[in-house]
Image 1 (cartoon, helix red, strand yellow):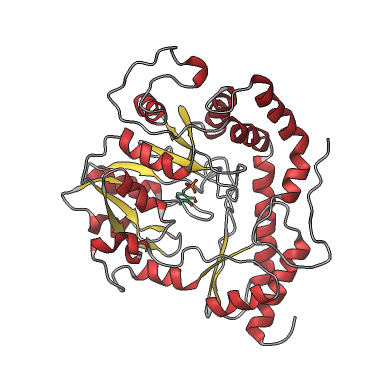
Image 2 (spheres, rainbow, N blue to C red; image 1 turned 45 degrees about the vertical axis):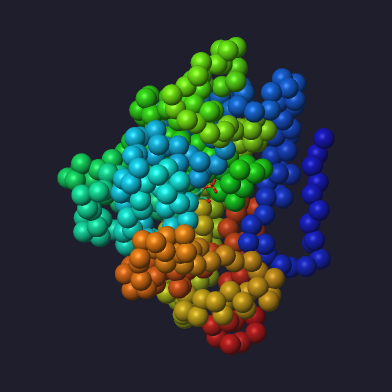
Length: 395
Ligand SMILES: Cc1ncc(COP(=O)(O)O)c(C=O)c1O
């Protein structure tokens, strides 16, 4: 049966994010997968999850992929599986999604913030060197928006100080550097399948990537109350009590089914994102007050960028976002407050001015609509309104 979703074609608004056309296009693939779930009658942690783990291992080149129920849980369980002890210092970027640092607290560690390299919006290796303390045990850069952090330089600092390198690669499916997929440059990384991600589910889901079989085994146990066994299909009938106090972070088979269907289109979707990024770049280059556009994504056998979020930096950012909202164009501020200044981390005692590059990015960053089913006409409309705001002339 075809899927036909309601869309308001009468108005010319541009949603910040929409999957309606994607789901209509992929519905036959998704429907076939969803039928398999209902036919088997296993809705959690079953065969679709195991298949997705294998398909993601093949796509990323990871030795092991362990599906869990969000990118945030993936970070917490990865930190625990890698031996984080209470109070261990984990060096994280001062500018990222809150889960990069809250996962550290949830796992029992202490975030140690590091300023970013403004060219990459990612942890600055020189600032990392300066932030290491005797309490530091881990370093966890995040790969945000479209490019990876400089993993080689960060790994060199980590090695010099005996730190374990983990990656918050929640946004980075498809991104590679030096021939390695994001998440595989240290002891492990994660993926988020939140609906707006490059590979998005119908709700929450996530995964851990690692080449270390012991880390994979521990994450696999932690996600299911500490019990060994990879999926519900291969659990022993009577589960052995475990020494690991785990959580319930199993992945739903319906999410895995949707992700397996969408994975077949991922590279085409990534190419479409690059084409839309080029369209934005052509139209926004030279517009006054736009202080930064994303770099054109590199695409080669060894290193590839992925335009997950089209993030510009702009003067009078909030006024620009308001202007666009009044004309029906959705935008998002990624991320409105640097992590060290967020209330959740107030006890660490940071002050405005401590992380100047993170603060500058938070004051200027604005994400424009970007998803495979956006049209070039819609990109035109967004850019015309940005120019109108800048020049004060109606579009
Ligand atoms: C950088 C980063 N880290 C962690 C997460 C958390 O992932 P999730 O929303 O799946 O819990 C996200 C996604 O929202 C993210 O963008």
